[in-house]
Length: 120
Image 1 (cartoon, rainbow, N blue to C red):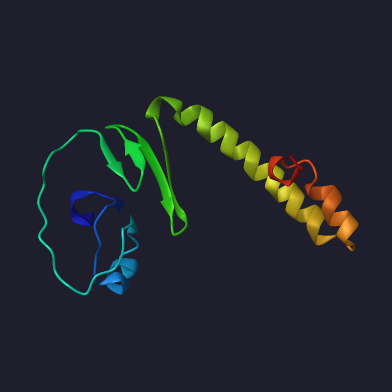
Image 2 (image 1 turned 120 degrees about the vertical axis):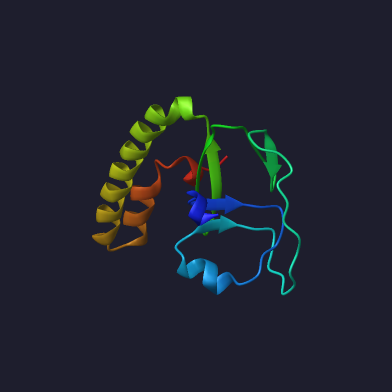
């Protein structure tokens, strides 16, 4: 797949030879690992699919790493990049403040504005 220009793959099926795949710097998300060899077949091209509960349409952009994947329409790429840069700057500032924190109260104050730190 990498020879065809793919930079990653998402599959509802398992794979083997995980160490060899990692060495190729090829991103992937699989349903599991299997010691056996399975059959591969192209069933369709340029159609919507659902993989691991994520619906993906042709042209969607997928970002993934070892923690998971997210997707968005290519038409929103500019907006996503702006928001990512803003988030990155906020996180860098927060990490800098956390490094200088000396008490639990300091940490609480630094994190209190995050949406997931509020009590419901």
